[in-house]
Length: 388
Ligand code: PLP
Image 1 (cartoon, rainbow, N blue to C red):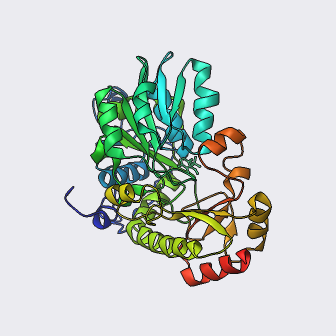
Image 2 (image 1 turned 90 degrees about the horizontal axis):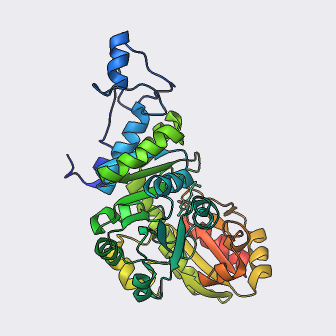
Image 3 (image 1 turned 90 degrees about the vertical axis):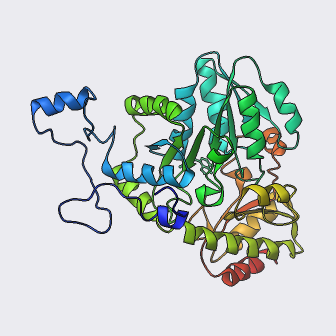
């Protein structure tokens, strides 16, 4: 079964069906499950037999969603969580101890910075940032107590890349647990487990849902790490609702088809933006002008659904551009069918200091376009009228 292609895996991985013989996955909207007898209850709690007990621990809908993600990412095991941030926090909290150190890539989503800067230090867990353009320096940042290497590639919002094969070798050489946030690429475009990642996580809120309807997350990886993360999640409780799991599992059925279109629209829009006079630079992994274009071609199937660009005129020009958009929405999400424009410096990355933003190239004129599935001609027209 694991030999199937992603288009088939994302549709033909299913768990429970009831006596009604549903074709589509039914929704198991229940907090708990009934025991056949007192002895059945005892045996389930003693782990002598398998079965659902309580939806904080397991549920057929979350099981199906996780099973699909494991097959798509080629991972052994997984856990679903209530959000992408709870996937990140739970993985770090489960695998780290007081006195440990994390080496992370500096180009990270804003709230991931907040976990490293503002939350983990409360429990004596320290961190260092490695810079994308200076991979040789990363080895020097590894300390005796470094336990985790945490990366995001492509990064939000700057679309910086990290060579996953290089990262896998670095983690291996220093006995680090390699955790990769694969939210921007999805398993359809990139499979970090095949380059040496130990744990791969996602905000399911983005391309996995694909329709801007629900918040959720998922963590997959090697059994030994997922066991520790599952223990943390089971008892600390960031469980995904069965309804959202049902929705995400249905959404995965169209992930390959949607990603093909997100990527072709994004590439066409990136090329269009490169020709605009008021645009100083455009960043998209599959544009030959991207500084890591060769790497993008090596490790990604296509360039993804997000384009970044810089408007000449800084924040004032960015505000004017946003306010003139008509078809494209102003929102802070991405991965939706609807194209979204975001100004990272004043929204998703506003909690970083000016220096921290400058270090990852989040300039006052930078825009992030999460390209949706509309006609690319209509998107180009909207951008054209707002820019010029
Ligand atoms: N990781 C990345 C790369 C993201 O872009 C986001 C959200 O934008 C998250 C994690 C957090 O996900 P959520 O909003 O589902 O908690």
